[in-house]
Length: 259
Ligand SMILES: Nc1ncnc2c1ncn2[C@@H]1O[C@H](COP(=O)(O)OP(=O)(O)O)[C@@H](O)[C@H]1O
Ligand SMILES: [Mg+2]
Image (cartoon, rainbow, N blue to C red; front, side):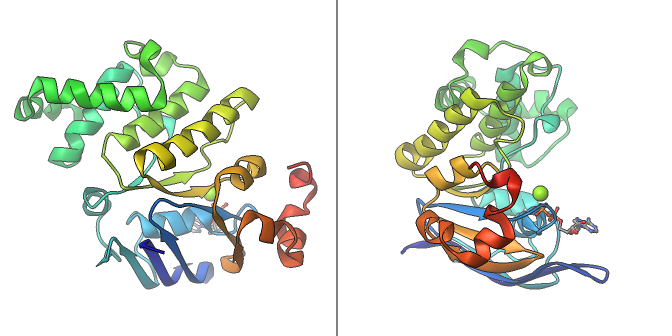
């Protein structure tokens, strides 16, 4: 396996609370790795420490062969490890196209306030920006909403825009925190197709935190199970479905029993 992301003995404490304890796992290039576990298990904290939002208490994160532990989020993004955005981080009063443009420009120039965008946009040729926007919009299939103001999009489309904004940074790996949350059945199917497309057609590596077990079981090659900050299991969907510790701690809970 050609390892792209390697997490070694990662820990994050909040005061006396060990939100993530001694977490180690590797994600191979072109793999979709699932990260699952009950609420409060430490999934988002793990994401935050991997993506540089929070400094880890202990441990190491390596990406594409480099030690990125404790680096600033913008430095980590520049190396190709990108977290998809929540819909709340988009410019609600700007069009889909403009939002993606902002993301493209900030990737090249570093994150800058909106008022500086105008000036910086001159640094990139217009046709290059347009081609990149086209590329990203096509991947997520939002051609019909190109000129729609982001704040007026239906919830599912806002989440898609969040993925598009992440893709504008030209990542080699995406970290996705509950992309299916709040989506209806058809939107979940679309998300499943998009995850496969990203991996199979665009060579993307993905770390996917998700409660929607049908999606996780369908798209992930491997899955890490976190409970109370600790990895209790790792394996293929088939292995975890019959792992008694996983079934007891997570999969057997009534709200996931149907999945
Ligand atoms: N910034 C923070 N300060 C203090 N405690 C936190 C903070 N972020 C998360 N926690 C705690 O860490 C634990 C793990 O939370 P989180 O990573 O959000 O879990 P998950 O994403 O798996 O639901 C929880 O007990 C949560 O209350
Ligand atoms: Mg979370």
